[in-house]
Image (tube, rainbow, N blue to C red; front, side, top):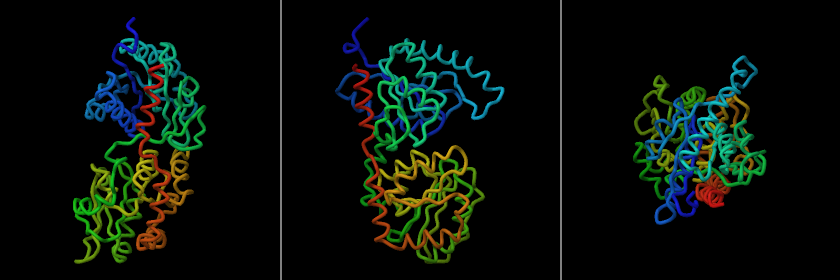
Length: 372
């Protein structure tokens, strides 16, 4: 066989299903592709399933996507649990054949349905593994993968994962290199906002969040009366969320279905009110934008854990979903937004927790493991 040093280096990235797995995978892919410019020849292949967002996002970013069978793991003991071993065997066999076809030098997994068969197939094919965990509370796939991996990278310090080393969250360069102050005026103009008013950004993930929408619409009068303008992404399925027309000369309240340019939204804002998914928390801290985090009230509590390091460092606030009311916004958010010194302190503490070069750090690890 041709020595690895004399042929194209083959890197296989396993991450699919949700944006929380896909975005850091693509950020790493971009970092690796930058290394290939004038450097060693690299072939990057992403693994995904037919049911995930990766079928749209990965080809759109110019990467090869190969599909493998998903292995969903039931959260509770059900009859479906009995089918899992057979599904795992089939998925591992297909993934191993794919790794051999690609002559993989390293497999990088980001958790989820795609990662578990990739980790097990890599072990059988004697391909080294690198694991990246986005959340403060690891999922099952990455807990298994960490036991098989050559290196384990985590986003949040103290993540309980075997041999985890703090690297941060790989982010798009549009976010990690954002100059918020330099882009502020242009970003506000882009959204039809005034240049000099304190600005609140509200978003609940790609689909929006009903509880955030209700609370903010209920607080619209209090916000605009205080001179605070709002950029509110309600979600594409929440088109019924509207705000009555503001009186002439009052602070704008701009409602959009979806924010295609999160970099511009971050540049326009002084404070965000949002969920605390792992990518969201990492992006906000990397750009130094303080936030009021409202963790998703279902699941295993990982969103609360994601936000805690930033909140404990003084870079934001945390409020439970049930406590987010119009009156709470009026008593807690309005005073903060009209206090420039307080906002500046929050922003500085948020930025101190951020990691802007996690994509490059993870690329270093991947290439080191592949070279070995």
